[in-house]
Length: 178
Image (tube, rainbow, N blue to C red; front, top):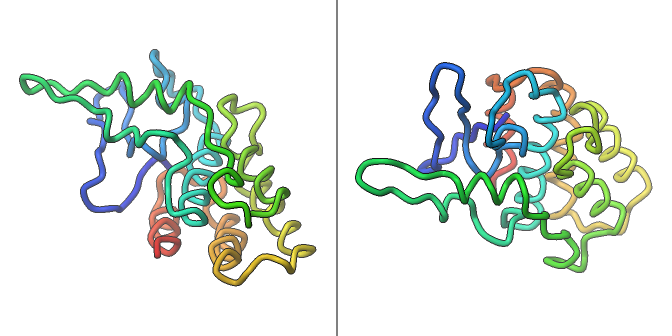
């Protein structure tokens, strides 16, 4: 994933053997100091979808500071070190700290998707979608405004499961933006 069709988004330059993406949606393994493309797995997409879900539900990124705002340009060189450090190292803000109406089980699902260690995340988008569907199946207390983005994810995640950076993923990102 780690791409976003949002206008004005700060994108990392793509280089041979380098990394690329939209900063706030990058997984910690994409923001690693020593990027290894072999470290990217479907769990990397789950992190990006977790950021997208968090933002669609809460209207903000899961970080205390927007990584894009920390990018420094000096003499034509762009310094992404602080931005990637935030993604790699800073814990995500628990959703209920932002909005107490978020159900604790939904918070647990989001925080699992946003784990810094990919081995602790859902293994792929299909697992993430199943968790969201289970939450929807028993939770009728969520108001409709909070359910709509989750319903969209639960329906569309299987479509993007295992397909990094494709058109379906970009469409999903556009669909979930208010």
